[in-house]
Length: 130
Image (tube, rainbow, N blue to C red; front, top):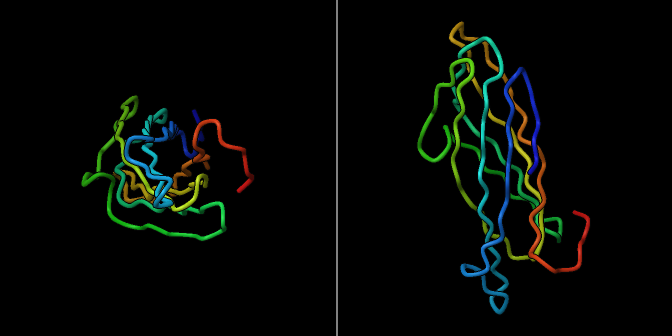
């Protein structure tokens, strides 16, 4: 589990390699990741946008930006938790993801919430620093 807290918003990520959706013969490797967002603050926030930087073990970078997550722009009141699952493919056996969420308070203040960097590795493979 990877976790980071920004402005009292904690983001936890748990990646899982999906062997049944991957194919080493085609250099196609797939990971799912579960994200848990917890509002430990005193302000209500809404997740507006996401940004991901995905780097494979060859150093190739893909950037993903867009509104919300999995088609939603959730509102988190103090104490609320929001969870979702998504995934990403790579053409290498390892990589790393990191990103941020743009959130807004009910007062209109924009907050950049860090998503912790997390490693994408197939089980039992030699570890490579990305």
